[in-house]
Amino acid sequence: MLPSRSVLLLALFAGSFHAAGNMAFTVSIPQPASHILHVTFRVDGLKGELQDFKMPVWSPGYYGIGDYARNVSSFRVEDGSGRALPFEKTSRNTWRVAAGNAPALVLNYDVFGATSFAANTFVGEDRAYISPAGVFVHLAGEIQHPATVTIQMPAGWKQISTGLEPVNGLPGTLAAPDYDVLYDSPILLGNQEYLRFDVKGVPHYVAMEFIPESVNRTKMLADLQKMVTAATSLIGDVPYSHYTFLMVGRGNGGIEHLNSSSDFFNGESLTNDAGYLRWLSFIAHEYFHNFNVKRIRPIALGPFDYDQENLTRMLWVSEGLSVYYEDLLLVRAGLMTRDQYLQKMANAIGSFENASGHHYQSATESSLNTWNSGSGVGGDRNTTISYYNNGAMLGAMLDLKIRSESSNRNSLDDVMRGLYRKYYQEKKRGFTDAEFRAECENAAGGDLSEVFDYASTTKEVDYARYFALAGLKLDAAVEDATGGYLGLDTDTEELPPAALAAGGRGRGRGGAPATRLVVTDTAPDSPAFRAGLKPRDQVLSVNGTPATAAVLNDSLKPGARVTLHVSRSGAETDIEIEVAKNSKKTYSLTPDGHATPSQAAILGQWLRNAQ
Ligand SMILES: [Zn+2]
Image (cartoon, rainbow, N blue to C red; front, side, top):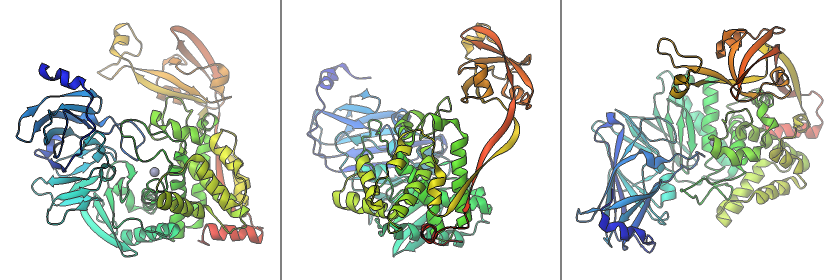
């Protein structure tokens, strides 16, 4: 609500001639159990009738619109003497304040956070995780301005873990040189464990929650130290003065930051060898991002526009090559064997080839469209791919081709080092698609259009030819899988109340929600495709039994015929399909036994002779 006297003021253009002074946030959590964080923001040195305050609509590293302003409530503004000032929302993430030339403004607002996830703020009874893009507003046009954050901890909370710098002499106060750093520095609050190891004299802090006592801390630190040593040796630099791993041993999701990472995982999974190795890959991935994406970055990914999507075709490089390097680092650090590495690469090829998305979408398209689907996955039909595993395969192909073309003198490592020096250190900007390709072709000393074509088209990939460059053979086998195969993807949708009132089928019994089984996709040339099933067809019954996912699944006996009673655009029909045998392609990568000396040298250099 806005008092009428200010309407005229707000119709004016919001002044951008404010040379603001001090910007100071105070964060308090008066009632942790209510999931509410209270923020006070004081700005001094202002001049202007109107001031716009903005909250990002997305968080760097998580390529989806989060609309964080929706979690904000009880927003109010006063001038420096405590007089309430009018304001209005002028966009989904902008508060316009009728400041009336007040030199100081004090904003107060609450942020609600009840979902524990790496891109969300969470406040709980004994801990909180601040995802800063969804907590701190900025004065429009003043992203480059420094800011401080003072944390007022609830009683009994002792640890503040973050990549932000502590301010000397002011316990609980942190400083950010600008809002890009502030938005890239999450803060973990509570009573987490706090460990440390050093690499090349630089401290690395490990803040951990919910890790079972049986997990050996000494080994964890030693392994992380080896991984960080491998990564910093690859690039030839340690670009920060300290680094913090925020390890939340519950939930999912990881996000990289400039000198920290948010790593959400299940702490119990660290109690077995396979889970521990997966965890190391995950941590290595988020860590390597401090180079690949935070510093070695496509031009679209910084400086950021916090008001909208930041589109790029290069997430297969930023994410995919980080997947590629997460395991290579472990091999080089002696934490993963060559066989484990090759099997993981073969499995990635399998999961890519067994999903239908690769017929529809390229790695560059997947990168560009991620904002529609949430970090590269999702969508109703299986028409998308993951630029994560596809990017890792493209990374291996680029690396092997560069090694082979340059007579094993150069590698993808040289490309990463070159990009780091030339664009991050010297030009202080990101690189274009063409510049990335030029660096790769420069290292190879020749044309790499075949690999770049694979990245930008859906043509079938001849993986074997690339792995052969290192004397490896890729074997593909079609194996029987359990159950039968229709090539039909379905989804169970809840019926809206209106459909029930209109006599919709599948009325729930005993309070269970009423549902319907809907076709989401048919695989090309599958039995379901040939029988004429289409996306959005509603399956009403399977062999006369009301359709559910379980009923459909039970009917899948190879060789059997099933009759689906289907509703399409209101018309009902029977479709008969013969169930095929279920199968899947599996891949393996092994040394082929008669490698030439140069192939053997490439393999040795690539996987560092790891056994
Ligand atoms: Zn990543």
